Amino acid sequence: MVAVRPRDRRRTDIPENSDSTLPQGVASVLAVLPSSAVVLDRDDRVLRASSAARAFGLVKGDHLMAAELLALARQVRRDGEIRESEFEVAGHKFGMEATTFAVRVAPLGSHGQVLVLAEDQTERRRVEAVRRDFVANVSHELKTPVGALSLLAETIQDAAEDPVAVTRFAGRMQHEAARLTYLVQDLITLSRIQGGEPIPTPGCVPVDEVVHEAIDRCNTKAAAKEIVLVAGGTEGLRVWGDDELLVTALRNLIDNAVAYSPESTRVVVSARPAGEVVEVSVSDQGIGIPESSLERIFERFFRVDAARSRATGGTGLGLAIVKHVAVAHGGEVAVWSKEGSGSTFTLRLPAFGGTAIAVPSTTSIPLEAAK
Image (cartoon, rainbow, N blue to C red; front, side):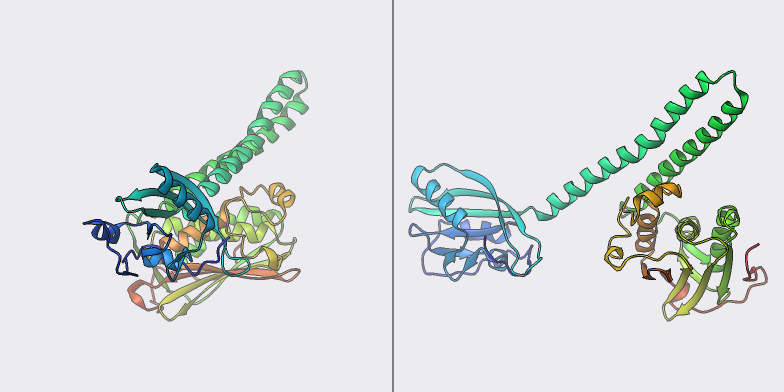
């Protein structure tokens, strides 16, 4: 393994390291290649190396540092055959991600020179791993309600003569069907916003209306646990964006707060100006989040407590949707939490007009405790 310096992926200027000459036109071609490029002479000395190759630690001085590449270059020099391979170099600091390269080695001219091209594949590998995990997680999450619906349908068929049992199992089927619907809706929303596409029709969005609409959609769930939803903070604030996406993000935060809070507590939704942004916070008196999990809670399907999350009916996509909605609006989401003391999630969104100021409106809704 070879220690590497921080990545400089795209620079491909090829500084000259010796007076040795290259075949005509080769230097010009190397200068425009996106890959890390190294040219070796017949004695394995580096004639030319791109700045990317040096930044990755593949080259130091006039030496190629990767033993695997040297061995490959010597084989190519002996038989003239082009070879391809993959290898990794370790990060230069503890915990730093290793870099994966796809390598192509070819003879260059008739004087024993060899060209080494190394393409960084780390990001592609990471994306492929995320995609595989996502597909596996979606399959697992869909399998649970679909399997439950199938089993309940068979049970109802067997209990056709028992109206009480039929009613009970039909209720369970409705619950599983609703869970399946929520999952599909969340997948559609996530697919819509994570593609990096701009918001179709952004406009001025009154924060008061977003807060009250999100609270209204969560009232039934909160009332079932005797949790009071309270709206507070500064009235008349406005942000730039899509009102439905913002309601969806805030509703997910409130739903989470309700799901992980004890009965007969309060969830407070508040807005305040903060320079060029508007901060909308959701605070609860719930169980809190372990510090070790704070960095992962916005990952798709990540659950601090998988058993408890499924018991609350969550899809595992809510916080991922919140993060992507915030990013799509040019903002961010932050979290503070302490186990046993509750959590506060804060959406920071660009203010409409560039400065967060309250605008009096005759149609604004007064902020008060939700009934």
